[in-house]
Length: 290
Image 1: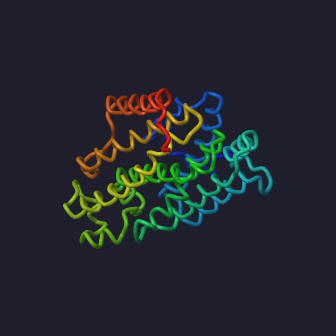
Image 2: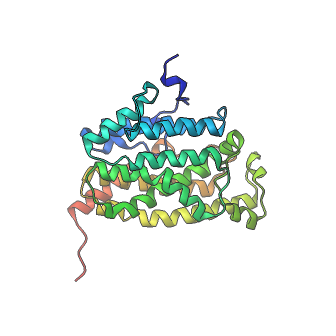
Image 3: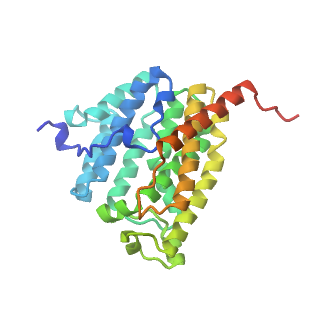
């Protein structure tokens, strides 16, 4: 058994399993750094989602990753992916803050199983999702002024993922991200997540989540137009289009009855639409008021 395997608990998931793996649009010179960041994030996410580990064990392992990526303590091969990311951050002059925030989110996953309301959930997303976008913003040398738009996009993606995976999260980890106050107002218990299909009450909760998510996507729609790097802007525009389409699909389909994902044709259409919008904007820039 390798030393890394005594800390990591690989799930077997890769970037191709994610909803929004559009990194081929990003500059080739940055892709190795993005892959290093993803490997780190995947490793700590797998630890947090491992049902066989107790919370204390998860937190201890996650703390080890946080220290390693920040260069604290002696070298331990078990945290190789964190050290590789630390070297990448030094080479690209990106802060380790985003990587540490991800650890804090996954430590929260180890102990927190319910979310009181939408603000409580977004507080979690600000640690578990927003840092990913901020890392990419920094990596591309973009301004921190676009953080709010990037945060809105990443948080929207996270909530869509929560709705998609609500049954799996409940069954495997007894973890429910749906805002508890909306569940109470709809008169639905978390046990409804174990059903073969959604009840009308649970459907109302899903729709409330999607309504709020669509609000985030409205904010995120400003992001591509603010990015200086055209390839990054295309990537953002494609992801926004995918998220909008997935939100639509989650409204008309039942995430308890089926795994709601986009078809290859829908995915391709979103890619074409997002890229086309950025190209059109570059050719015909919007007129400034005044």
